[in-house]
Image (cartoon, rainbow, N blue to C red; front, side, top):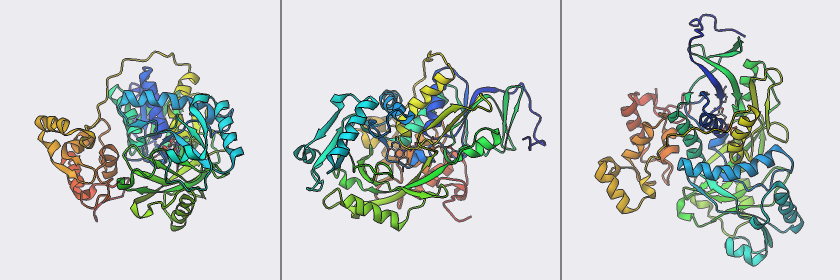
Length: 480
Ligand SMILES: Cc1cc2nc3c(=O)[nH]c(=O)nc-3n(C[C@H](O)[C@H](O)[C@H](O)COP(=O)(O)OP(=O)(O)OC[C@H]3O[C@@H](n4cnc5c(N)ncnc54)[C@H](O)[C@@H]3O)c2cc1C
């Protein structure tokens, strides 16, 4: 196992973390946050340049109510628990969450009744589920096709700003003592005297326990640990993002009836005021986030079966995310080979909803006593787009840079971008800043402000402009 013999000698006096967590998606950051709250000394190790760059950045951002997952599974149990926990966390972390509700619409009343019954079995309260008649559906979704007769309403379904949720979980942990490494490409993990010695060939990290929640990269870490590897499957989900101009297209999530491919192609609002149409569900060999003309055609065909005149001409962007599967249920267990490793694998939908419950389960598995430390609060970046004129005036009185708008589409000021760049995780990519303050996320998709933001990052962090990345390694914005 020990390939890095020429490294600086391992100094046992070096810091030894209680836990090293592999993977900075919503699952890894939820665990990082929870363990920090439980007074554990934690480091998050992420291969990419920032948190929230895997499946967690590219999904429907729905906090599912819990009627979809098969009863008795971990998915069902953690979905219901996560739906409760996530609201409290969003309040504490100042992350946008809206309980919009969701409807599943269709003409097969038996299937709707099955979902209703499953919801009750899974633990949703009967007052939070209702089968609607056609008039009730049309009141909620006026542009639905008139030939749709039935719907199940799940009142506790919601939408969340998934970028900010993941980022805020990590930020709060870091403010309260947790550590992190980005762009850390692990090449070796040794296990000696009950300590894991992790290396990327340049820096060594010591930890007593490891949590492997590296998503599509799970097996890479398992291989280094010589712990259980699983056969992973990948399913791509493609989307359209619609302009805020059509933000009244749907006010709540509208699902079709589920099929054997999943929850189906849906329409949902986002907490930022856009509409998402998607996702497709296409098996693929590699976790590649491409967008295809076939995928976009499939979205249009399926959305047209649900709605009258969908405004496809208002699409401002397309994206895709990869569902990483491993059998029918989540795998969350101690390794049988080394019980100081926790294997977390196959966290596809409803993984975002379940993430705080997964973190709670990890603490239970580790028999960590529920004593939360008093956490220092994380602060948001003061989005002026969400403030009243009076509040904006007050901010500008304190700091003039709140009055200098860099991204006109999303009304993002210079000061917000500076707040993001100097925030606890120190993002240094264009997309890292975008996910925090929405610069380049608007109607023009960065046509006007990309270079301005790149210059600000370059000046603030002293990185040459030609080294500024869009998102991942080598995604340079300018020619080299
Ligand atoms: C199309 C789609 C729609 C979805 N919709 C919803 C929804 O509406 N609601 C819901 O609840 N769930 C939804 N999900 C599921 C949800 O997005 C995932 O369950 C969740 O994001 C998984 O989080 P994660 O942290 O396990 O994985 P990821 O976010 O993929 O994080 C894994 C991280 O590990 C890192 N990594 C990989 N290899 C290594 C390595 N060697 N070393 C260090 N780090 C490494 C990656 O860079 C990545 O950041 C959807 C998923 C998809 C794809």
